[in-house]
Length: 453
Image 1: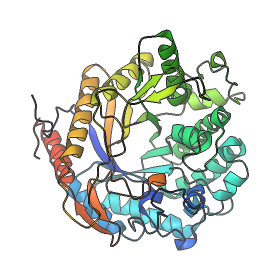
Image 2: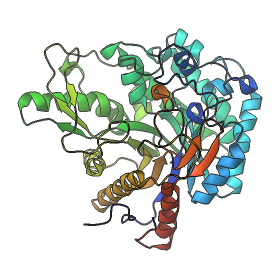
Image 3: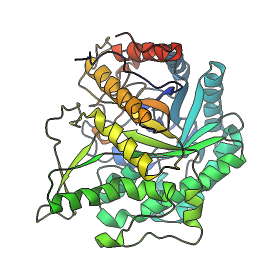
């Protein structure tokens, strides 16, 4: 049996990256005129975050940029995916740009470029301005225009030297957990009434993509959270439930981008999307790459009698679990990529925009021997290689995350980082997985198939 901590076989030419998001690492929630987002509102609600965390100071990343660039240099990545918060650039969601915030991200971009690391900004990683949410948020088509205004401000400052851009991160989680079930900000519980947020996010992406390209960007994409859906059994009821879940978690987000049309929602008794003339053409012509964020498969069964949804989500039999309780099944990533590519043979190249796992670790500054994370990453990189061997075009692989951070509604209870963070002091300590990933990148560049632990 192969050593699960060894480096996997990797395809030639793959780019290597790691990622963070602003609200999760930056802290400094009022610095340089920053406004309030739906996540500021969420963390201020008593009991909303499991450990009472408020993302302040988080990793203190807004003030420790040089230290974090040094970690990236040591890792040897090709690119760094980070997010630019709308509420720093346009504090109330409308009005003029905040030059102090733009200056900050310009310094970050220039610092990365000076060290040979490609900056890969994300324009929207869930930090919708509170004022925009009060006016309807992603349920309102007007938010598309507001987002385009914000994107223009960032593009005008940075697109002349930043080639690669992500527009929106995980529209599925905003729709399903933010507006559907209320687990995440803005904490609405609309169930299928949340579906208009799908279209407005995809349209906002497409508008921003056109603006970025006109300002000089050459590589623009979106990244969606995807899962391989596994029916719990072979009954017609379980298969129908798995189809319904696959539609609302995966295909309603991917097919407008990759096939130019939404799947048939009305067949499930759902209302059609609020599409206007020209929308789908704009969305379908918006990608230079397609981002896939992947963490786990999802096992689905027919809904119980009292369920408000047409499916039930079950544990995945036999799968080990991450600290989050998510099933670990690397082959599910391979199967998802192969299926997506076969259904859309003319799709643009795929980027793995996030892949990683949380595991229990100590809070104090310490060197962590995180063999479980190494095994997770090795298995999933190997799954990408198997997909590539079957003809899937994958350009880049991104580990989530560079460092431990504020994990949304789970606060500081989950650690995903290659770098350990002591949140009481901000001290960063590279873990064993940091060294492993560094050595894997070196081995990949040398054409070797081995790696160090």
